[in-house]
View (spheres, rainbow, N blue to C red):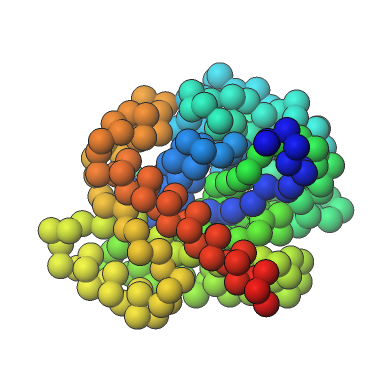
Length: 273
Ligand code: ADP
Ligand code: MG
């Protein structure tokens, strides 16, 4: 039973890509919501824009302290986490000071490990979650670095558009650098193709191109471009709550299923090795 289960640290996944507008936040919110159907999930908003916080129902003026207070103020995680409209999904929101964190971090000791240390100091609170999903800002600065140092794996959302492959090497090189310098267990969990447009030949070409290059690192599940997905945040809801039957919501449910399958396969392979 759950009560007898030994405490186990959560899987920590970072959503990163230095490009903005590729679907990092949308994927973190909706994959998180899909996972929350069966797991306890913590969403960590590390983007000063705070779109992940807004998207799960915490408007800018309705938030207290969050990730900034953890990173810079060293406040305990458990005092900063808020519930959301989604059962089993909690959030560490982006506080309004977070915009200054990129600069403030530069002068702090262990500036790349602040999030990792904040998590380590809160191990007991953190063990209540099965998954921690970190939404990164659109840059490869210190906030994203903190996410990659604290994470087990990275999910890279990639918008299915003409220049999709350009810039992916930047994030993969950063992952390699973090692995060598800070966090040897970090791996690429996968690349998610987002905003796929079936009526557009280009989308198909780009998807084929990305698969040709990154092979099985690319999730089979593709997220379609769907207006319901883009409407949901203005209601403070994940698309799974806003319109469960929409193609976007169903795609994120499929993505969660594929992720869980992949994780099971990876852990079986590890045990066998
Ligand atoms: P990022 O976090 O990488 O900057 P977002 O997740 O905020 O990207 O997505 C950028 C914009 O695209 C947002 O306005 C979002 O609502 C919209 N969007 C994301 N995914 C989809 C989709 N599958 N269909 C339609 N619009 C989408
Ligand atoms: Mg974002």
